[in-house]
Image 1 (cartoon, rainbow, N blue to C red):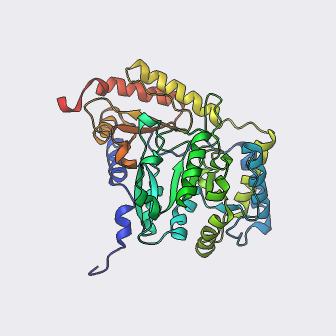
Image 2 (cartoon, rainbow, N blue to C red):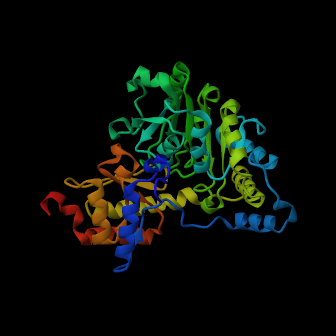
Image 3 (tube, rainbow, N blue to C red):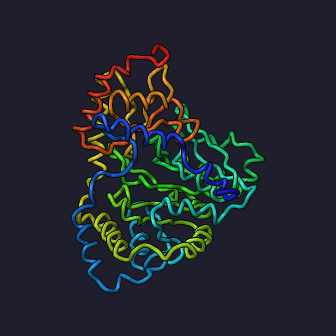
Length: 398
């Protein structure tokens, strides 16, 4: 191609670990059956009433025009009604709710709307890859917020240098979190609001796992904290809560002046979510809000969590049960790096997990396991791990 080279931004976007894991999975799958617990893609379909709502909507001739990037009035009103019901948070559907083609879409474009080269964004480490990716796409700099077990995987805001705070435009938070499955109390969000006001920093909270929590726990919204609407926004999605990952619909809510630049970017890059999918999303929120149809998502993943962790405990791998999300953040046995252990599980047990350092340097020493198979298959994965003998073998003894 001569002097033609792609943008240097691409160098920062994808982890080589994900690529290598996918290649090794293909190689192992040619020789044996593989249980894939790597990617967090729900394995269940949407509830029948949601499929019926979509099916009915696609029969209407009026849904095939450009829908508009902001979302239909009916969709935004239902989001506002659900937020009031679920969190007690009042929203203006015209100014404080905006539809998205998945929360990753909004997160990816938010940096473009708000930062310039030289600006800093505070990003959780470990964190979902698009958090760092959005910063690189926008040409800004990121400052990692270490998430460590000794703090319950909550960032230490006090330790951030003053100079970094001065240059930071916004910070990204995610509770319940991917990959570490940590949760945050509302009191922590109160601290975040005070920190954001002190340093004039926007708060971007990703609440994609709000409805995937266990043992009666109900994750709070960041917007429930006093003053949160002054400083922040929140993303939420239908992908995990309602098994609608392929439908690509989500939304951002919160401070209207913070949403507005993102809305401008969105109006220039797409024409919005297919109107029939918006009707499906309205049906999901309405049924959940009114209690007409029970949402089995939390109970399904709680059962998987319980059976899988019990099976792992029986073979000597004790892991703290997560309170939320579809992931288990598991410490690797002594003597192994995250990468070595994940590849050994794949090649010797036929089980795919993701090395923790794929999500940031602070993820070293862990693997992320997605509960995206039936309980019986998860228990089979535990049996394979036991039969491989990996847990009792230190890598440096090989």
